[in-house]
Each structure stands twice: as C-alpha cells, then as structure tokens.
Image 1 (cartoon, rainbow, N blue to C red):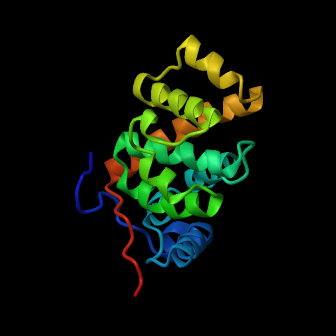
Image 2 (tube, rainbow, N blue to C red; image 1 turned 90 degrees about the vertical axis):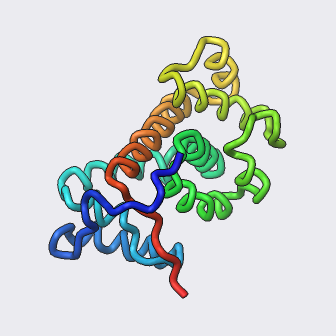
Length: 184
C-alpha cells in the first residue's frame, strides 16, 4: 500500500533547524546508502528533543539489541512489507543483506511464510510479527512457539521492535517521507 510520490507534509530541515546530531546522521546514512541525506532524520529532527529520545530507543533495538542482526532485519522487513512502507523496505534491504540475509530471503519476506526457505526459528518469529502487526496481539499458540526459540529479553525486544517499526511506518506515511534519490 504505497502513498505514491507525494509532497512531504513536514519539509526536511537544514542544519540550523534540526541540530548537529540529526544532520550528521542524515548525511552519514545517505553516504552509506549512496543517496541524498536521509530525509527520515531531517524530518524527525525538526523536533530535536523527541528526536534524541527516539534515537536512543531505536538504537537500543537496532543495532544494539539482543536479537541477532539478521533476525532484527527480518522483523523490520516483514513489518515494512505488511505495512507497505516503501521507505523502510528501501532502507533495510541493503542493511539486511549486510546482516546476512540472502537475496532470496529478502525477496520473499513479504510473501506467505510457506513460500520461503525459513528456519523453524525464523518462521515462528515471522508468524509472531504477522499477528502482532495485523491483530495487535500474539495468540497463545504462536507465543509458545516463539518462546521455544527466544529468551525473555528477546521476546520483549521482538514485541518492541515490531511495534516500533510499525509506528515508524505510520509516521513515514503520515509525514509523506519519500525514499532518497540515489547518487550517481
């Protein structure tokens, strides 16, 4: 469910409007992705205090969470696919590849779980994410299955990671943040 190319509702800020932290992250993220500076940081940075708090929270989930990076990226891509977040998909496909997901896994992350060559652990994580995003809950059967593979810290992180990227997909859509233009 794409919003198509639309004008941003909050214009990406310049250095004086968003502060050094958001500015540096936007430029560094763009450099890593070989794109223009990241508008996500340039828009969210318009609220400097909230941006700093969000950045700390988001960083605790990814990249500094307890789930292996490949699994974190799998969760993020699944949420992005379920929510039709072109921006998140665009940003995290490259990151997921660097975290160890195969091109096939990345391509299949938005399809039926039976279509992918997932491990049991990956399959139960994806099933839990599906329920969480689509119903705002995880039923007891799916919870028991995922709890066989994750410890308590990872279970809490899984719920917060999926919820965070669901919230972020909504913010990106509502603010009309567009994927950055690749540099030539």
